[in-house]
Image 1 (cartoon, rainbow over the protein chains, first blue to last red):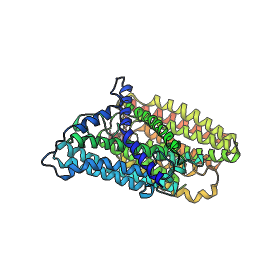
Image 2: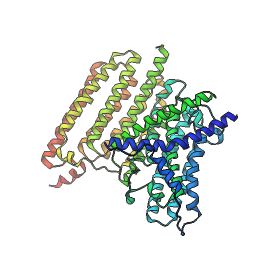
Image 3: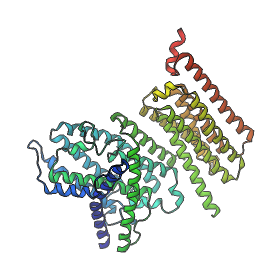
Image 4: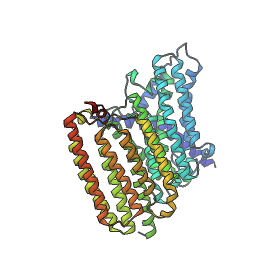
Length: 315
Length: 225
């Protein structure tokens, strides 16, 4: 039991420590594809250290929401980390505290507070960004629900650790149409939720075109660092759910040995690196959609998820 | 490989091909561009051929391999070539074609059709117990969505692609029901599709050279003159 708890904490530390690196690798790879040098892969760490050392400026007009939001945005992915398989294939101490729906709610809570904080300061770009994120969010919500239903029908459970086992045991399960379609749909969902290119441009600095970035424009110093770090961790956690539960449910630690756990870390990082390569290809080969075409993108994701549940339930 | 593992794997792969076929039906509704629509049709035909091959290897039936070969020859190579030739330059320049409904609405309508097709096929499924049971509902769905594409597009060439997609759906359902259709019937069906494409393509290019457009919605206004 003590070891379960310890491993759970190791998971959290890995996610906190490696999440900025994943972001750095993604940025670097994208720059290399565009035949530029690109910043070092450790740049996100330097950014975080710089921001943490700086003073924080808070507008007098803002309320407590503005000051609390960075902590909520930072803490939400950590709570989700406790619920999902990051390194181990067996349930850890906190695994039964909440299911995938619970994890989705926690991430949605962080998004809700981030949107409130963006409106709170009275910065016009904040309100624009908040309303746009809400638009993407409420279109992504039905997709998430459909993916969730399909996955839990397949597995007969809503706990991610148990769901993950379903696609491992008979290998033919892995090729079932519902699984493949759910993977496609979840990939589109991740692109929408993390603000990657067909939906949003994460490296753009033009305020009128921003969706996700414009919410944190008013933050400085420690607040900005926590918002950024929380964003990195959210991205990392979503990738972990996608890879460890849906796409490649192999290579996780199967026993309680510490060596197994340590072996799982490089394997998970390798999986994430391969996924980042795929993401870079997607991001570099597509153009950003116009705002009102995001509806079409997410409708396509929704239809894919419904097709998955149709092939699961009606066939 | 043990026989039962082979059987379950091939069944699952066939179901996967069915899933991709289903997805390509929806993709045909979702795309705006004519060339993308044509590419999706080619991909859909490849999934059809793959499903026929898988079922053929399962039943050890040469007929299904022949179906796959005919599909590849006619729908992956000949028909796209014919259609590409009949697409006018005006459409290449415009790229996007108008639809009766916007894309999310037409996708949701296609979804309603899909549900209808599944419920229609459901009572028949127990009679088809075997590896090919996915093909019937998905083929039926391909038929309905093809008809929907014909109704919802306002351009001649995508409508032809819709008719061909209906034909694909019928084939997919057909290989589930009759795994040993005589070759002559398969050939006749494939040739039929080819001739249909040829006639429609010729007609579309003639209309284009006379009227200057192949937008079906605009053609109705010409009747008075």
